[in-house]
Image 1 (spheres, rainbow, N blue to C red):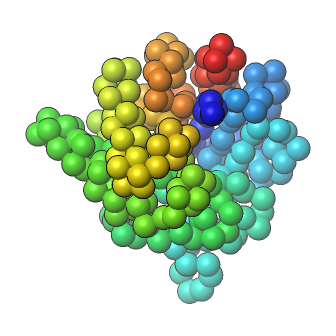
Image 2: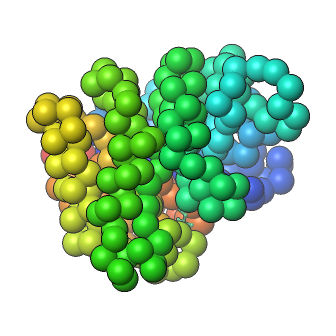
Length: 262
Ligand code: PGA
C-alpha cells in the first residue's frame, strides 16, 4: 500500500482571530487544487479558533482540523483545560500530543502523554504524537535511545489497530523554530529507525510500513521537497511556515506533487 502525504500546520500561540480567519481563507482558496486521497492537509489552530476553522473546513475534502493540546480527562474540575470529548464535539479530527514545547515548558512526561493518546483515540481523534531529541542528546549519541523511550512509554501500549490510527511526528528539538533543519539524510535515518522500532515491537511489517511519519523542524518552501522526497518521510508538521498562506501552500504543493508522481 502506498502511504499518503500529509502537510500539517501548527499555528502555536500565534495570530489574532481576524488573522486566523484570513489565513484559513487563504489556504482554502487554493488547497482543493492540490489535495486528494494521496495528499492531505491538517490545521492545528489555537484552541479558541478550532471551532471556527473546523466549521470552515467541514465540507472541504482532505482538510482536517485539530487541537494543539488537550487534557487526559474527559471533563471535570480542570480549570483552563479542554478535553478530547470537547474537540470531538465541535467537529475536530485530530490533536497534537507531546509537542516538544509541551514536554519542555509544561513538563509533560511520556506516561502522561500515553494517557492523552488514549483519550484522543477513545473520542475518535487522530493523535499526532510528537517525539524528538535535544541537541545535547544528539551530540552525546543518545538520539535513538531517547526516541525509543518516547515510543515505548507513550505509544507501545496501544493495540495494532490503535497504532495504525495514530500519526507520529519526528521533530528534533534543535531544529524547531531555529532555522536549523535536519538534513534530509538525518531525518530519513530517524524515520527508518522509527519504522524498524515499530516492526520489532509489534512483529508486524505492514503496520510499520503503513504508519504515517511526519518530519517537523524548520521546514520551509526551499527545503521541503528534499525532505518530503525521502522514502520514509510522509510529509511535515510545520510551525513558522504555516502562518502565511503563501508559504504553507508552497509546502502543500511540494508534497502533493511528490504524491502525484508516486
Ligand atoms: P517550526 O516548528 O516549523 O517553526 O520549526 C515546527 C513545530 O514545532 O511543529
